[in-house]
Image (cartoon, rainbow, N blue to C red; front, top):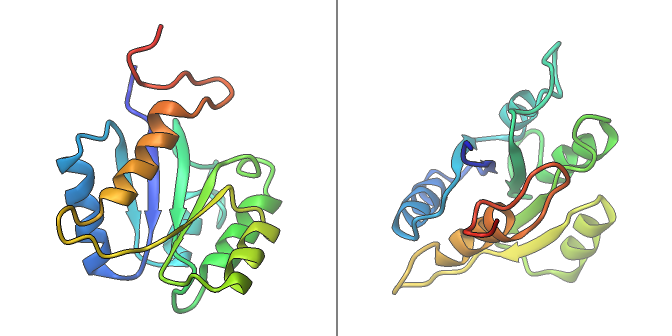
Length: 150
């Protein structure tokens, strides 16, 4: 069985580097795709032009809120209004811990909200743990987790 696919959307190259390294260091079993802005994310999700939908085995999107151009809330809104992606888990990953951002994210249909944090002993470990949850522990219709269960 192939690894589950996750999409990480963030315009901060440093964050993407830390995310990639943390996932490798924590041995998270996932094929990770990266989008550097909302427009690229919508394209990868098949929500622009005549694309046929998201990548096969896509289990979750990890989405930054504050991006130039098409922001995270707009990506989330478009994901939820499309029949092919409306049930796709979306985890907001943001520097903001403002209650207004949390409320808006959940109102738009986020499944989870994670505040970015600096962890000198294990940069990005919190993100690796979140990805592991959605890839290995959470049960999604039609896909069993990739853990050691039978």
